Image (cartoon, rainbow, N blue to C red; front, side, top):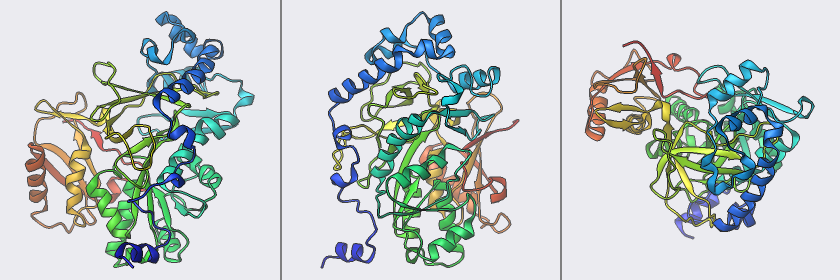
Length: 459
């Protein structure tokens, strides 16, 4: 018997990254269709969405009226003729017309579920869903993404995503519909997570990459045998990090597990992209339900969705009833990955490399915190892997040395030369100087929630 077979026979639930057949595809007719078929399907859905949009939504009636465009006369090929929708539009509308804003396109009685955004960029927004939104506009996409990652009816998933108020809680229903066994644990309850794993309750975990790193640190600090916990699959989401090679390798080595990612945004769908066991990027899973674009966040001009393209994704709801969003700017930055995948999906693949508002400029060069995060991950376990770049109150240009706060297990017991080694590694690879300061975990907050990669303070 080969070493590979011996390895997988010891861990029968483990994913295999060298194969990915039809068993990993939920909607083969859609997920493996050619672009012409997907475009035709999407155009049909868009005709239905756009046809009644002006009558249903006072928000879009005003926006499109001021722009002098009629969405029902615009095809997806020409959708750039329509104005963008932004998070600030949604917040302003909900403040003026509480609780859901003027862009609610159904009667109050048709709203059957309400989530709130995390509010990491300000006051939270309410997200209203009809029954069809829950089951299809969100549910079908989410099912595709989690099925793509390797969640099947044999999976036993310990999830640290709370049931509410945030949209991540909607995954509970999705995992249940896929037939998986779900072990919910409250966010931040590290001891209960470890207890559940030590008792063999789960072979899969779900949470932020920050929390997965934190668990790896706890396991190391307590001298536990990570592989013996039986976790063979870790699904990361909620923030960038799970796709950074150094961070991904750290988590996989700690548990002898495979890490796959999901990406979504609550206003469109809590999960919209999923990484199959082959790896190499996250597959778009919203075919026929969401229409994607890529733009330059500065010029707002279209960028082709093709390998090597870097830009801000923009999404249009094709089947959303309660809160359809048209050309919604995500605020994230994607890098489009290579075409083709052994799993046979035909949709494009991407990596989220950060948020546009986290980007800063050093001597004319655009930098994302993920570039620094990848470097400091090599210094674990002396550091935990979390960091924060301190930006000025206004503007994005930063003169070196760039202030960076790095979380350490014990801020009172740091090797005297650690800052020098970190600063040297950053300067060698990124060609600018940083000023690293070490902080304890209490300053960063609960690792089971999203960790903001930048903070603005007076200079």
